[in-house]
Length: 153
Ligand SMILES: CC(C)(COP(=O)(O)OP(=O)(O)OC[C@H]1O[C@@H](n2cnc3c(N)ncnc32)[C@H](O)[C@@H]1OP(=O)(O)O)[C@@H](O)C(=O)NCCC(=O)NCCS
Image (cartoon, rainbow, N blue to C red; front, side):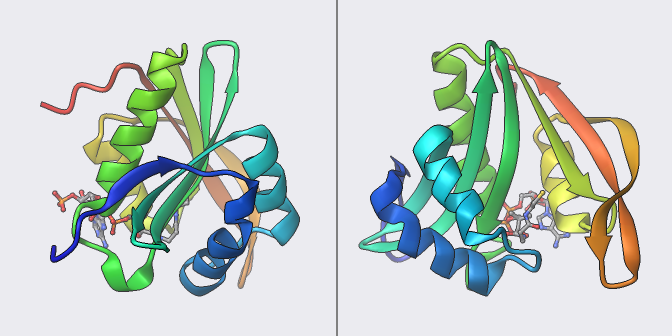
């Protein structure tokens, strides 16, 4: 990696950069309003290189239960450990403010994301049938969770 990536918490002012990354690198991008709301109400983080965002993630926290709402790595930067780095840094931050467990939902067809979550110790807890719209109609969601802290070896 030629330049240093900084782990940063995002604010509402980062909305344009989030939307740009989301539109270019998420096959199922959120509506603009979802990012606007998450930046205002949730906990959003990024790996930043200079003024550009390379990876972004959004979490919500209710009492001690954390939900990973989204994570996106720039499609040109995948497979370099950045998704793992952002998720680990975000989980560590959230644990420090009280999160004790993290839940998420992921499309059944999303092999890279499911592998990333498994690699970090998440286990599959169940299925939500026909949860997501997809090109072929509907697609199941896989429910995953992990206690915190993560033990990444
Ligand atoms: C899922 C995503 C965030 C992974 O980011 P990434 O930076 O490429 O992932 P990493 O390089 O950190 O990979 C970490 C681990 O995930 C797994 N993994 C990542 N990409 C994989 C792939 N294409 N196939 C299989 N396993 C993969 C591997 O276990 C990998 O560990 P390893 O490199 O030691 O084998 C990225 O593919 C992405 O942004 N996808 C589009 C948005 C999305 O679907 N987000 C998830 C919403 S639920």
